[in-house]
Image (cartoon, rainbow, N blue to C red; front, side, top):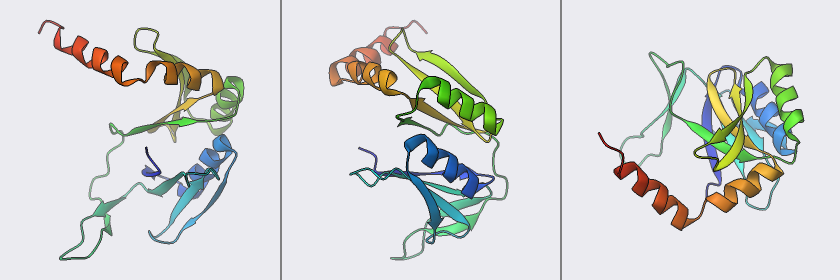
Length: 160
């Protein structure tokens, strides 16, 4: 179970506010990391996404010290990072939110009709898969240990 995650952003406050809107939660500054914000779902799990300035990194501390903020010399434009998040919004509302923000938003089907998602490209650089109620039901029907084992096994049977 994921309780929280962090992601890079060019405009941390704005991105946190949009993600909070998807969840029906709220946004607030994240005092532990300079110039960062949190999108807070307001659920029983304490789910949040921290949005950090894109040109900063989390660096290991020294000795027994925890992580520390650092600067990235060459922050990349894209990465393999993404999240899948639930929303109570309808698909048309999520797509309209993407249009309002000027961010790519597209309904997609994952796998061999496993489940649908809306790819919402935060600041057109970082993807969040947004799942409406019906998409969440599809995902949960697919996301069983048996199905993941079968899915992983199918990758081993693909000829090289």
